[in-house]
Image (tube, rainbow, N blue to C red; front, side):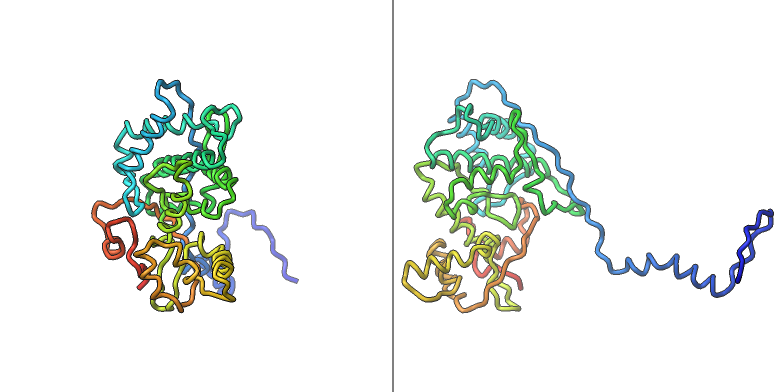
Length: 324
């Protein structure tokens, strides 16, 4: 048996033998080898609670709502891109956005004088609250360094404090979904390229059904909702469509008394007319889910090739909008 004896003298330790030297070198080098080719560690965005403090105001709720409509008109482009840079530099617009959010809280309290009793009006109220909150959240995180990633659970983590009522964006979305209409998720605009756009108009009870139809059609006419993978000859649908694809197929078959139909055919009646004509050419292709794109859907002063080639200038994407 070999015994290792601690050397308490001032003499330096003898150099390790060739075997020990090799093992030591491998031990030190192992972390380098194991990390070669590994993805860089994620640098996720740190989210903070956004406090919406109620402020006494002489302006009526309708006036604040109209001010919010002006924000949508001024800073949301027809194709859904948000001019966050201009909004960030406009203190009056930011003040009006905060004032509108302050006026609608506490969101779901019986003591909220702004909360209507009519179910359609209540849905419109909640949708306006959601879209204003997501726009405010986008303003909070802009500009975003390209090295920083938005966490996957952004909608759960991003919290608002309406007076003394804390709400995450997801909880606010659930209030909207109390109305079981299947079109509601398409009206929940997000500031990211992967989801439905924040629409340029406020929601109202008397126009709600038409507005929800348009939200679905806008999604189908956008690169967030539909793209083509040319290499694989696949039509890629955004998750709001793909996650409930059987719902569209079953509804279409039931309506027209068919045994089966493709997803693309089932969706054509829901699209804008110019999109319908182009979707007809896609019938017969396979379908697949479109990967989520978490890039901020911000307006670029100098549009890139993607924007120039894929938008018709009227708020709809040119089909096929896709991956070369």
